[in-house]
Amino acid sequence: MRWFKPSIRNSISALLSPEVHKDPGQALEPVRKAMLDVLGDDGAQINPQLVRRLKYLHDPHALWFARAEMVAVLSQLHGEALAVHRVQSLSPVFAGLVPKSLIDSSRLRTR
Image 1: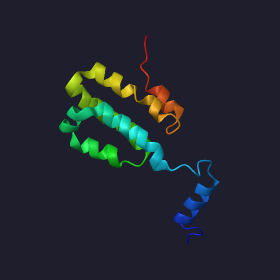
Image 2: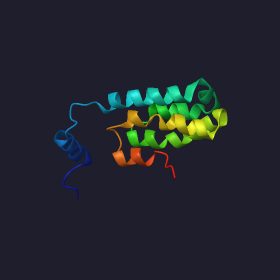
Image 3: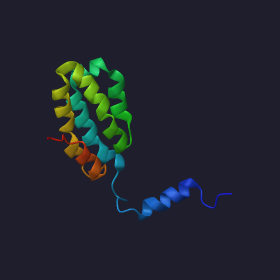
Image 4: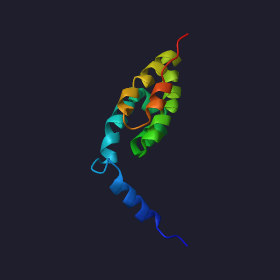
């Protein structure tokens, strides 16, 4: 038998977290807008499912990992090099939403 229901445990941890007053949906809106802007109308026509996913994903990590699909779509339109560059330009909008190690690992490594 459970002592605490998940909803109670989640609400207690929400009370104790430092981001109590910040609405997570509001924090993701600039990220969504930036991703949809980079994808553009042509990308939306090629993959309308990706546009729906970007609009309704509620987790910053899920949005972060959707960038790989964005590279695939943009590669069809502009080539791989430009697609990777455009998607990497989104990294600053994820600051504070995903761990810094994810943002650092997305940078190109030069030899």
